[in-house]
Image 1 (cartoon, helix red, strand yellow):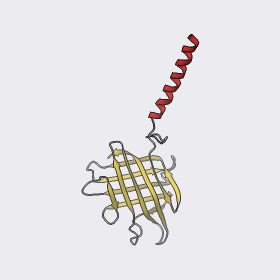
Image 2 (image 1 turned 120 degrees about the vertical axis):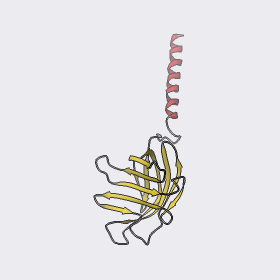
Image 3 (image 1 turned 120 degrees about the horizontal axis):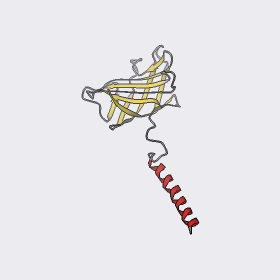
Length: 168
């Protein structure tokens, strides 16, 4: 009888502990603390997860997002800024309608950004969710090499971000 009771308690303990770990993730196996910015750069998936944060200023009219790849250097990194006089909210932001920029810093001074080539104004950032703890959205468009001449561009597709929210 004691052996059977011990076996039942052990089985119950194993089942209880495995159920608890399922509650800690968001349903797809990723911990809710996995913040990132990722995109396909000319078709190649690139993801940065360190220091992945979105900062909203106290006035609520400017947001900046940032994530980098390496702990020891500030690059490679993705970052963006949007200023909207009426306030940042869940909606689509384009270069034609808002003061905004999206940058990719690869190494040293090699930086691509959405404002370098005035003939290309296709960059769009969509903020789909703002909570007290995070900001989520997507983006797409073309960035140009800031140190180069026209024609040195990267196409960003399938861009998305999930960033920890901070207040400035």
